[in-house]
Amino acid sequence: MKIYVFALVLAALLPAAALAVDGDSILGVWLSPSDVGSAHIDVYKNGSKYFGKIVWLEKPVFSEKDPQAGQPKTDRRNPDEKLRPRPVMGLVILQNLQYAGDGEWKGGTIYAPDKGKTYKCQAKLGPDGVLHFRGFIGFSFIGETRDWTRVK
Image (cartoon, rainbow, N blue to C red; front, side, top):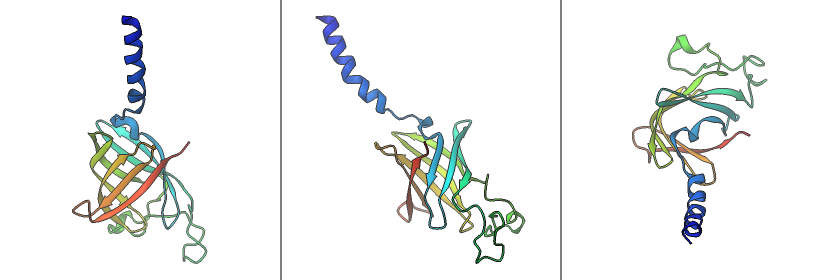
């Protein structure tokens, strides 16, 4: 009888354990949709913090209507003039995100190369596996949320 009860308890706990989220659940490559073309962001860990760099662009070169048509995209909207020639491909846009528990990451910044702006950010991993990523200025309610999906 004891083995039967133990088996039932174990069976009840296994699904909960399978859904458990830890800080490293954010690691991997994510699709970030954008009005100017989607990107794949590789989220990696350095120490206890999480970072992300662009590893794929839907539109990796400037459009034919652009003066730099056909050239690889650069960080030309960056407020620091010296950084404008750097390529967008490989650019670290997510920095210093920290796991706060309960499937949430906070305290980081995200850079939007299409705008040349850096925002505070936070993320929450939903039960459906979608990463709800929020960039904001000042307070989180003044911002924008993008849903990132894991790249298979």
